[in-house]
Image (tube, rainbow over all chains, first blue to last red; front, side):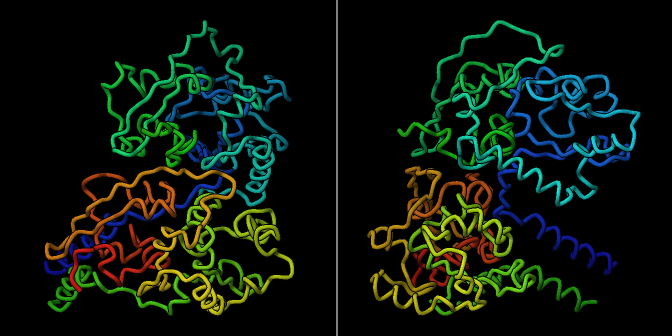
Length: 273
Length: 245
């Protein structure tokens, strides 16, 4: 009995230590790795390595909307449950990575196949490049970083995230985003943008937010945010707190993961009152 | 068996007793000095001696710990010779333009001597006539900036956040006999950007998190800086101004 009690006490001590941890600075994600994610919905189960997906490679060509609305990628890694069979039929990655599509550049390699030669294996590891403990080969990692630096060098700079001011890059014409994929997207007449508006801050002394629909719709259209992330009811009825945002709700659905991080306060809180 | 239980009981109680077990302080000219040795000895080099005091006379914390991506724990930043030579980390300034360059200056950093900058410290104190304090570097850095005796820069290339947020927080102490701690945002934002502390160190939740001394002394919350670089916690009244001598 005493022994059980002692074990319980020891366990409680450790639990206390585990839960009391906090208030520690997290490691900052390096610029080339910001927005990267490992997709392992089915890979390991199917006997292949998980996929390393780089947002920056894709967002330099496409709007967020194309993949997250038209093609239907979920907003959280591994929530979509992408399968090789889906890709082969032209869903998910296979919508563009089909060995036929080209978007101004070369023909995009085909994603996934049930028949492949040894030569084809090279194609597999273009995406399935992460091993079981989520580590890539040093050489592959360096290759990625080099490609990123080359691209980022040509883009307007910004603090945090990828260190790239994506919004400015698009605005200046340094990026020409594709918002329509043949056979997947449907053309709709554009909607006029609501004017920029302010959102008050909760804490005195913190500048107000100026929210611009215009800047967001370029990338997202309407459907990416409304009605799931923002119900879109009358202005002021829903309250957003930074605590929610940091936990990944509302703006935090993108900002902090792919879009510029929320730690760059003055990027949104621009209007000093 | 009974003894074991007693020991366990003591262990669970001890965090409260360890509250004021402040780590021993180095001499004032070595406070905030670190030896960086992530891969140095592995590669046949002496560890790098780095003095925070020397750098903070010219640059605010945010320059290195924000813009230049230096992490907050020694040996966790992947500083390499190649990175430095391509203008990252130390190389952002140590390029022969802003500060001394790589070539021919190996032993200015790779000297393995934590007291390497001592002589310069004494010169600096004499020359700049900074306001003094009892602990840490012996320098009241905050007052030095306020009086504009030193003017550390707030950014190199990417403009800092510069938010005029000067709210003072009153934080109740865990023991009723201890007067509350007063936290001035202003003297922190003189050196730091919001994201140096939020939301990692302080999650901005108004209620619910208590920044206990036991946790702080383990390096959490205020302890991230105020154990090793910013003024140490030996002077209770700096934060708990209502405390008697």
